[in-house]
Length: 356
Image 1 (tube, one colour):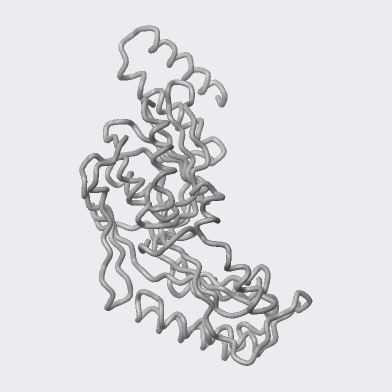
Image 2: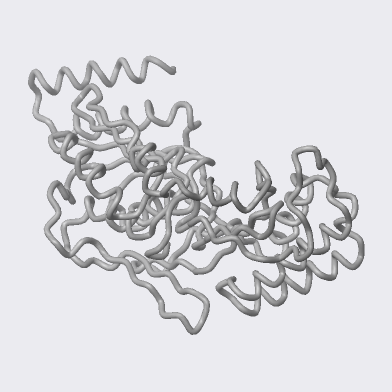
């Protein structure tokens, strides 16, 4: 959730390559097993990075000590593939911290050379974000004049602002709005705050803060202070979530639910609340490390470890229909009897008739 962050955690960015495997050559595509020395070097490099980056120094020290103890006892010797070692170490870190942002992952395509690494990194991150339309995937007006907005990531505000503004302008005249975060992997804290700003009319309303590793200062995020077209605090909002909603996606749902600004529909989320950043650990592994603790401004709450519990439980595959029906039912209650009221009642019957 830091200002320099992008997608995959509340604020997950691609880290710079870090040294950690001295004297080792990058693997070839034929190298199928990890040698004991390579396992040892990887775990040692991970421990070093934890003590440098993790937001809670005491937890970092305790976790590093635990990993080294397990390494000495031969815990990781049987795990000779990158995938199996990554899962084992990730499981151990979670056992010690209950932090779902701590993940050791094998590099999908090991870098054959520094030149290849440079070539891969030569594609600007902004280009990659543009190719996903900055997370804005679907905008639609559903029957009953219910707006639908599927958002899969929170790219940085300068990149995502225009795409989000365009989407919200298209949905301007919808009587209710469904925000689909079922596949949202998280991203920039600033864009989480920007998106939340469309649902609150008060400028500068405190939303959440990120407490980094001391002595760095706490970063606070508020609703937009500058005029923001199409912000609307009265329109009913329904947020769709699932087990594929992570980090910043969970955060937006949590904040709107906590303030009773939206009804959350779907499946409980994983509970990855801390801010995280991905670092290239060595030629074989990358690691995500939490570098900030998130707290909401309203009640000081967090979804770390607990996730977001939906107001209305529904299987992910049926959540949109359920939310659409609830949106129309809510609109019907406010309408006088007439042609539009009858049209909405008919649409509601159609939706509810799909699944007895």
